[in-house]
Image (cartoon, rainbow, N blue to C red; front, top):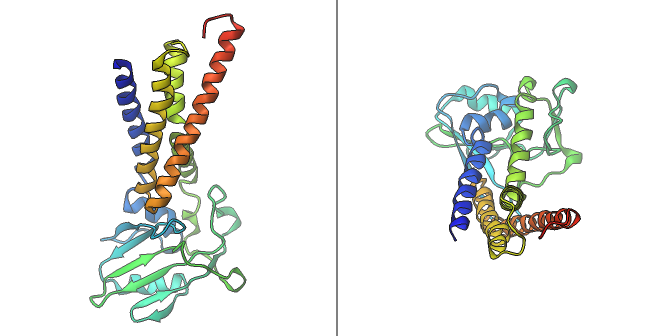
Length: 261
């Protein structure tokens, strides 16, 4: 059992390190602002805070909401930049903005929604809550309002970095535990496929760490609990599939070389 404990601790530490590395910039209010609101509003205002509103149901999406102290100039800028209309006391929205990106600044490396749905709430003391895009609002693209962002230079900044982080987190969640355990146990240490340790490390441990890691990942990003748990099941199954493939390749190579399994 000593080997299993070593693999469990090492895999957990490496998994956590890569996870935090992939989410480090996204966790800061400035990082979220840069990727969502900066093309429309420019530099982040002082006194800004950001929170992720957790999805309320399995089919919903989490939303990033910024809060600011009272600032009349910023209030007018948000309303004008998104052509918002007053929809209630202290509440402004435009449920279907169709961004018109300049060709040279089109964010080609990210999957952009065809429309965005920003809203702004102004409290009695002048403080504000602002959502650059409520992904749970349905929109009619045919009647969407075409608008060009005021600061298109922010559209392509850090795009490659965002893609690299997204790919890194996808690999981490859906195949890293299987690769880590199978390569280390079967290829580096050259253990037999038939030992009980192989089953525990390459299958049981992989499934557990993949499941727990995915739960942390999806919950961290604000998804609904049900969606998070089902996503963790998928992550665990995909890791088991990858582990099975690696174990099969190991058996095939060893058989071809005439070595014991």
